[in-house]
Length: 147
Length: 283
Image (tube, helix red, strand yellow):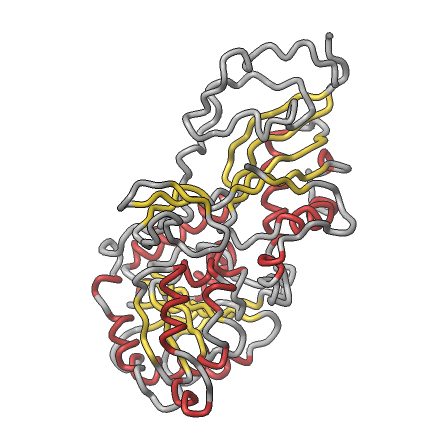
């Protein structure tokens, strides 16, 4: 159900073709989004070293998960107070867009950003997922854990 | 659509126990907690993670990524409301004709209404210079100067421009966003309404390629209609594509060059429905 992108940097693998097309802009906002994520996590980490950061991003967000992952290191490298993020990995959980039909009640997952019921074809639908944009959790290294 | 409203699942987990496992996904399950039903978990999956010796601790956050921008946007909105000024965020691709349309708008409206313009541009004051002389108050925000060359205006940038506008004296502020079909759509700035300028030269398929921008608009201005005789632009296909991503959105055909539709656009700007307090709480 969920797709994930992970890694600190390097070649973005497995980009979704349809979403690659949207990178027409000369600059990307993923970097400033990563800065927002870094601020949030650094605040909650309270000095503890962070190893992984988990995001949940809906498919209807104009955000490319692999670009987020690529920008992550840049975003916190020079940020004050973000030293706890050094070496951390961003993990993006992609949530598909889903609609519920007001006519027939069927829930459909959208492959393209067209708000339409897959069962009866009407556009009289309610969006139930796809706009998520959250820092869900992060992991911090601890000195020792009792087994 | 409530794009920037808190999500239903944005509350912290009721179960705030730290997870001891550093594996995001155990035993091939897509996710430990799907978050669809108030964070209910299968019986037995909660609590006892003591068998994992991984030296990591999971901290649940569930915080909106753009929460800080949204907070500043709400503060901007409060300042706009207190001053009794309506704010429209005008967005488009580069070259769609925002500035020309804005000049024609000021030519018609500025004699009757007190208008402020916040002009976003990556490096130059060229656009702001073109809007000089109409009697509007103009505040330039160069996103390439001190803001890291951003491709959009965000709420803090708008906040930084507010002291340079006589807010209490204005009826209307038009924010000319940075020309870009991707980034500005994600950043609320405290506006009442969003309008986007789409030029017929861009092609009728664009709503499907940039759905977030087209979905976020309250009004789509189809500009450069004077060029239609020279193009293969399929107006009906464009409307179908637009309806696919933003069903029933208002559309206005305009030509900033010939003046077609510009009065109707000015009427939309002056629409009392857009006045503070009367606008639907979309963002």
